[in-house]
Image (cartoon, rainbow, N blue to C red):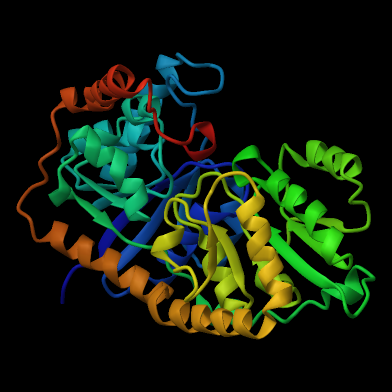
Length: 410
């Protein structure tokens, strides 16, 4: 009988359950328990109830980032302590593989795993600035998983070997999401039965572009006065967005409902989903909107075209301003039958191609491939400088091209 392999998942994140957290939980709860045993080390307390429910062993700590975006930026002692604790966790638990979920823990785990000669994978759910690719040590990881081809581009441009990178598109637990009951949004928000309700989901940050949807809605109301927008999520831009609603006279047409545990249930109760993300590494919520069987309006940006195609499974717009997005929003009302057909095709496509089962199987195959190798060859330490070379070349040739995200994605 083959020995069960112990995998140490190291996750850095804010105290919420969003894209990378959801992917982590889906992965560890769907792993083949006869082959793999997960152990989690994290700074995210919101994961704990889910891990306890799944009976997964865990450790929780603060994760200060060396040269990160928050103070203290040069806490060498804390970094050394993390390296030592990582070594201890590997040795005491007889870990067979380290799976770093998000780039930040790579900063200490690449050294801890190297010292223990333990195979390691870094799983990237977002694109990273060249500064972060260097300071977090992404290029010191022996293997990298990315959630989309779009995320892979900057790392490959740095010179990361194609043979050591694998694109695994995120999967979703379709059965769990389909089981969410539809929310009667019109009744909940006291809207007219004939109201057309658009929805958007995500953190209320500049990158998600909710301000652009507000501008599009302002113009849409001139033609379709009973249009509404439901905003699902919280974030630092909420106050600014509320002020924008007042300035644009959108009172009564925009409804901020905060974080919701049953996002797909809310989407089912709306007429369409709209993303105005200025940047989007993958777009997990696009797959959730497909499960909800509502028309999808989204930018031709990042990993989104790897999920849906314009005119076939979504209405995609050029990611510049809001005029092209407004045209797609008009289509929801002027071509309802055609848009619903597109929504049905997206639903069928996601159920077929973006399942959690496919997602877990692809990652397990990579585990198996690494397991069959006699030893793990860690990259030389000088490889951490590769992103700096890319940034300098871009600055010289193009006036600067540094990546697309910062501390929100460590």
